[in-house]
Amino acid sequence: MPSELGSGPVQPLTTGWPLALRESLRTAHIARITEAPTTAAGLCWAALEALDVKSKPPGRIGALGRALSLQATRQQAVDLHQQMRTVVAAEVAAARSAQKAAQKAADRLEATTAAAGGERVAALAQKATKAHAAALDRSAALERALESQAHLAAVDTWTGFGNDGLLRDSGRWLDAFAPPADADPKLLAAAVGLDALIKCLGGETAARLRAWRALLADPCSLAQWIEETAERFEESLNWLYALRNTALHDGRFTSATDLLDVHTGRSLVDLTLEFLGNWYQHVATSTPEQAGMTAFEVVAHLADRQQTVIAALRGGTRVGLNVTWLTSPSSLAGTAPDRTIRRWSKGREWPAD
Image 1 (cartoon, one colour):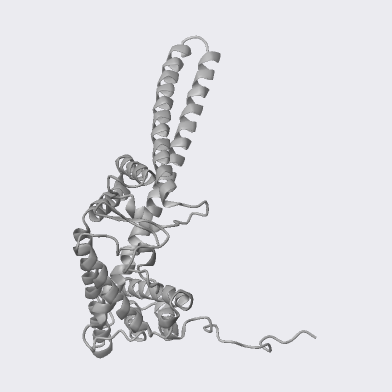
Image 2 (cartoon, helix red, strand yellow; image 1 turned 180 degrees about the vertical axis):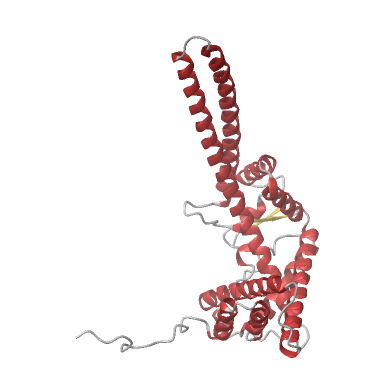
């Protein structure tokens, strides 16, 4: 006879979660499904407290802010690559669709003109001429879009972008923004293609590409950007802590910014658990000696790494900015070039190990 519902072996759903993150993950889930905004925001702080991020002793909130700034740097760089590819693909698809529609309309008017007679011929011929002109304009727009696709292909050749849609090496992607004059020819071709894309694309994508080109060309400016990002994270964390206190101790459960507060709190928790989850997923195979670190010890370790990266950037080099390993447990992160690629600084090539 079939077993009754619930009679089989029962195991907790959290057995696959890292021990150091289980309490925080549970609290984050409760914060996610809680409808009251201020209450949910307070629970977001509780999820961070479960990671031993507290107001005392002093400096713990600042340490998390510095760790988050590294993860934000990594996410910004990788997301920009994906956004660029998405925009190019969308522009090509839109241009091709518009060209087909315009050509179809022109062909239809031409056929109608050929079959018409009498006084209608002149009017239809005029419309057909305008339709053909519009079709030519659409064809020119499609050619420009396809040029953008060709420029993107040059970037892909250097970055090693795969058919599965994954960026193989984010370090090579950053190299394309500001290569030295004597760099690898493929890198120089990628840089030319990226410059052309910045000119072809518009809107936020082009603005972000220009901003990152300026940052990567001046390591000191990038160091300042990372520091300012860490300060913004710290301010947001302090606000979340203050919000929790006013709700818990003063009973204030509504405010003019409560919806923004809860979105901020959930985003901070998500980003924190993102880099911690990645850490614990890979630490056993990459650096087993770090497998026993608590969640806050990981946070403190990454906060120190952020200081190391900033110090290198202040010295005028991007060698320590290994985006692929920026928040990972690998010993390569922030201390040495990626062994799988070549890195450049001040016009010199770092040999691969």
